[in-house]
Structure formats: C-alpha cells, structure tokens
Length: 452
Image (cartoon, rainbow, N blue to C red):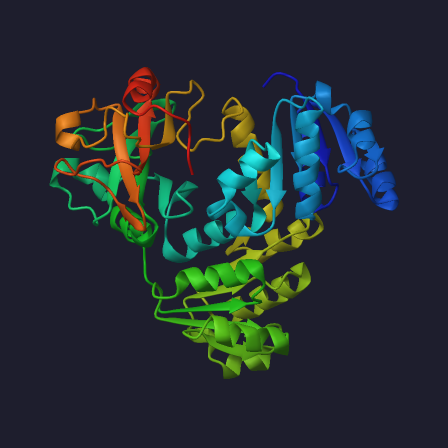
C-alpha cells in the first residue's frame, strides 16, 4: 500500500491501536486527543504528530491538517463528538471520513440518515462488530460482513464457504432456500460471479446472501454446515454487547443464562429478556458458577467490560469444563495473559475496528459490502416512480440480465424477495444487486436517487 496521510481523532483503546498499526506500516499520522495527559503519553509512545484538543473544534481540525489528509477517522468513545468532527472535517476539505458510534441501532436502522446528515463515508459500531463476531463463534457461522438495508428490514451477508457447504456440493437450481432469500453472487478472490442455476461455489469462495432480516439467520444456517443450536449459553456481563448477543440468541439456543453483577441492571434485563434466566451475581465467583451449573453450558461468554474480570471468569469456565469460551478483550496490555490461557476465542473491538477500516482502505475507500478492488459490483436502493420504465412490469417481463438482480422489494410494511410473476408497483422501494457493466442499464430502468 502506498504511503497515505491519516488523521485520527481519539487516542483511546481503539484510536491508539489504529495509530500504532498504521504508523508501523509507514503512513503519516496525526492524532487528535482532548485529554492533555493522554496526549503527552501518546506523543512519547508513537511516531505521530499529536494535536491536543477536541475534534469538534474547527481550529483543532485545521491544526491537524484534515484538508490534506487521505482519510479522517473519528473513533473516540463519544458519539456526538465523532459525528460533529466528521461533519466539520468534510466541510474543511477531508475527502473521506470514518465515524465510530457505540449504539448498533444507529448502523443497522439509521445509517443512511447519519451518512447523509454528517457526510460520513463509513459509519461503524464497535458493539455491532463485536456482537457479530461472538454470534459467529456461538452459532458456527462464517459471516465475513453484514450490510443493513431498508432500515434493517433486509440484510446482505457475505459468508465464507467451506468444502462441505451445500452451496459447494449442490447446484443452485437444486436448492430450496428459505423463503425471502436468494444467493446473489459468489466471490473467488477478486473475481465475482453471478451464478446460474447450474453453478456451484468452490471451497474457499464467499457467497453474497440477500434476505429478509427475520430469515437471514436461517439462510446462513442452511448454507453453513457447522451451524449449530447450542443447548445452553451463559453470558457473564450484559452491557450493550452482552445484551445484543443475548437478544439475538433468543429462539436460536435452548437456554440462555445471563450473570449480571449490578442488581439494577439485572432487574432491567429481567424485563427486557423474559425468555432468558437472569442471575444477579459475580461471574468470577467460582461457587456461584458451580451452583448455577455453568459446567453444563456449551458456551460461556465473558463480556463484563473489564478485562481482568473476563480473564478470571474465562479461567473458571474452562476449569469447570465448558467446551467453548469466548472473551471480550479491550486492552492490549493483557494480550500476553490471554495467549497463555489458550483455547479461548478472543473478541477485541479495537482489532475488529482496525480490520474494518483496513478493508475499507484496501477496497479503494469503498464501504459497499460487494465492492471489490476493481469496483466490480454494487448494491443500489431505488424507488419506483410512475414514470419509471419498470412501473407495473413483472420481473419475467423485465427479464434483466444476470448482472442485474432485483434482490428485494419494500412495499409499505411488506418486504419480499420477488419472483418472476411479481410486478413492481409505484412507490415500491427496490434493492438491486448490479455488476459494474450493468450500471447504465440500472439507471435507465430505475431512474432516480438512492433511497433508504
């Protein structure tokens, strides 16, 4: 990768790790930090220009030289400051911005609004990245990336395929995919292929799945041979990430137990997660784990928000014989302890953020889930107007080429994956998967601007 100039706002766990990694790669770094003591520490530890101040102030952004950077990254722990800084950086001339937010709902449901209002090019949630990785481990999924469309009514999932996946062993025409879903493409390295009914994927390929949010987990289980339904999952600590994991697992595992130290939070969780067993206690208390039969769990998730507590709880779970232990690790200073522990899945939000940004950079600054280095495909969302050539036309009559797939239709509150006889109606919103060569046809058939 050629040398770039990056400006990072926030020298906390995420920002410092990003700066460390990018600096080692030989890039020019400017780091903005509002805490004077932390700014001084960072200046001694990393090869970067450190600007003391808040990224929500124009003078600070100008001092950092955002107008001359290749990418501005607002990754502090304060959502409002990150959003304001991204907007200001864009107005000051930053060509691209990455914005970190904490709440997953901002990304899953409202990302288009945030992207438009705050002019951010990549909006990401550390909690969403972490919870997705944890769910992958628990359910045996191979999700590479997820994109949320139509206010989270539709999901795109890019998943890795192993040699025993049904998409590898069976031709597409012989599959009965769950209703409301389809396979849009296969990826092999940098090559993209829109499959015909006769096609099968190859081991190591990725598949792009399009489906209604309520069925997409079922689709992934169908095509991932190692998907499973664990008998019991125990989650130690139920903050934002723990709650997201517990809520997503309801109905997908036989039993969920949550151990929460805060009595007030435990009472709140009892109302929000009525199908889960909520225990008020300390997950580092061995006697509690024994009394509650944690040894019988299939999976133990340590997500207390404290690395030392997660380390101790994980050690106890392993000692009790839990076969799969997953732990959240925030700080790099404890990495050597986790390596000694072994046989534990480590989920590090800072590492996940770095990988997501690295993918974005390596992908030519394109955040689209299906965009490759050569920009071979994209996903568009368009509205059907009375003047649109496709208004009142069935998919069979439209007969689009293989490189243009109408993946989903949002009609009021109804969401469906259309088939040949289905007609497109005025005011429908359609999600379309398009190879680059068919973009001119897309603009002809579906004129207008992007919609959410």
